[in-house]
Image (cartoon, rainbow, N blue to C red):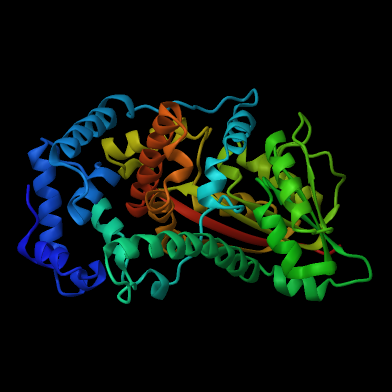
Length: 424
């Protein structure tokens, strides 16, 4: 397989890849990638790094690419069709998060806030399009807005730094926009008093959202984060100590300190926040009920969670399989729809008011692929870890790409919800 004339000329002249894209060579590049797929007998875009490096930078021989392509295709079709970590009611979620936290890889790539980010149309413009194939999306994202780079190698170095930083910054954007949309910013001013307002972060992970709120509101608040994972509590406490934040604490998971049975008394918190926690909770009504129970009158609730479509009967066979895989791979007991979450909140009309919901799928969708690309640009946390980590990383890449597919095609939706507890 040889480079197209445009790509070969650009390589010989050290033309930046961004300029190559601008001059219209993305189509020849796509044809080269497709040729490599056909050459190796494949029809799916699962060559990832090896093929990308071969086509764009010509660093790997075609034989190695073909072998990797065949291996990737075989793994994709044979070994990665069924989830390996189904939900277990006896602590499976906490165990999985303990493993991820102790391993450190998720934090290396995702940062302290292990949730999706928010992207404006302008921020995604030029590098992300929801219908792009995986390789095309990778090339666009790597080369976009780097026209001043002298050559393709520098593009990769700059992309590794700039795009990785951008990925983590979009999480800050997400939290800030959700706090404003959900009324927390206004509530902190409205409810301000001599003592700090108490904020509860349900499913706090390693404390990303908790610290963002602690920094955003300063001495006006005292944040408490809870999680089922002991390892997450330890890591969250360590990061918070290093950040010298004194208005954040974390509680260890225990049989009575999960989202369905919190040890806090009624009406303990002025504000309750839960970001991407409900996915792992088997009883969504009890989950919402507990958060409403510990919320003070006049307090506000914000929930952000992955939801499945309300049009379940219209799902194709492939989409039903996709949904089942996502259940079983990341320890999800069940998803419900945005509409069903809204109904659960509205059922509490005697205690909750100003219930609003939203679908934030468009602004969060780029996060899925962006998270994979971070590992492509900066793979070193994985490279020297050995075959076991390599294989688990492949599983995560496949799962994340399937998440992208599910959210892109409407099988899944990103639901956000806000409500205010009635004053007595």
